[in-house]
Structure formats: structure tokens, C-alpha cells
Length: 78
Image 1 (cartoon, rainbow, N blue to C red):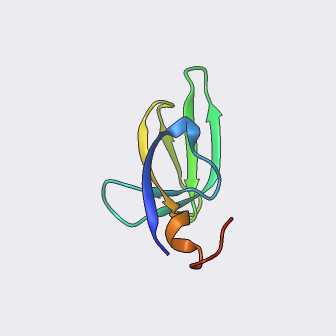
Image 2: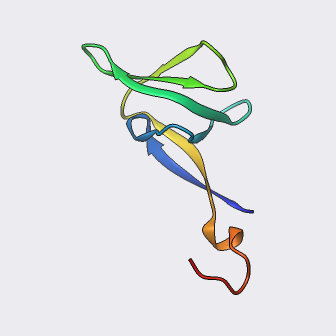
């Protein structure tokens, strides 16, 4: 199965997204919320239990998404 990489903002993250950081291993999003008077996006990752990372809402992040063209068996349609 292949994967594609897409750039989104921190505000567009969803539970289960796989984030590809600048350094280190990929991380799976387990919590995503907007908080504060000057809003920031609070994100928790499965690989770092209990720790919360804070990002500006417009910060670009890379996420990994499955490539539907390589994950389907040959001869089948969706």
C-alpha cells in the first residue's frame, strides 16, 4: 500500500491523522482542540502520552494519507 503526503494547517488536523514532523518518527493524532483567548491548536500524539503540543492555527504540517490507487486490488473499482 502506498502513501501520499499532503500539507494542511494545524487547524485542519483530525483524530487519527499521521503527522510527519521535521525530525523524528511519524506521530498519530489522538486529541485535537482549539483553546485560549489568542487561539492555539492543542494536539496530543499517541507516541508521546500525556504531552500536549501547541501550534498556531495557520502553521503548516505534513500528514500522510493512504494512496487509493495503489491500495485497491487490480480489477476492482470503488
